Image 1 (cartoon, rainbow, N blue to C red):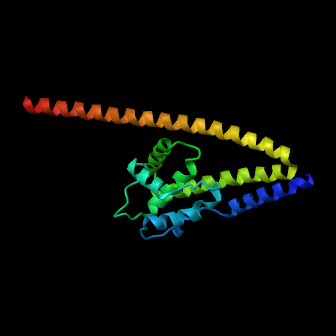
Image 2 (tube, helix red, strand yellow):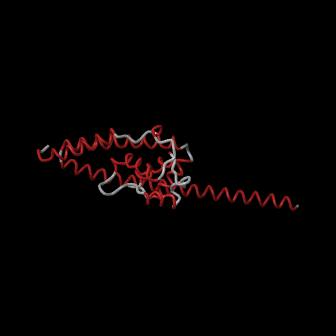
Length: 203
């Protein structure tokens, strides 16, 4: 490593250390009481600070209101938000850098059908931790090898991110179509049953 690359190495390895040490808040350390908007934003700022870019917050009150308005986030109870809201906001904020909000909505719906919010959040944290440990290890190795290795790693990570986003979008699209087909089949089956019952009643 060249001497003039040492500050770059220190900056990146310090960031990877902070990220791997600073895990997301565990479920049992979430506030159990309902929170108002300003309290939500304070909690989420701590939750997300390692993932934010300068002057580009991942969450604002306007964003929260829009998520509720669009049906992505459940409506608060008398302007107060629960632990489930915090979980969904955490996932929304971290995934919206990769997926569109409608796709995240589909993903959350699919996950909620398969377990409670506690289980969902634990699974998300495990996946997030594993992914970060992998990428941070690659950054540390590249940083030790110098700037050229970092440039190549940035390219590799960008290509991988694009490929994985495309794959995730395709999976979510297929799942949505499958759900719509199931709903349509259930609707048709109900209509057929109702028709038979009405015919029998008229006989």
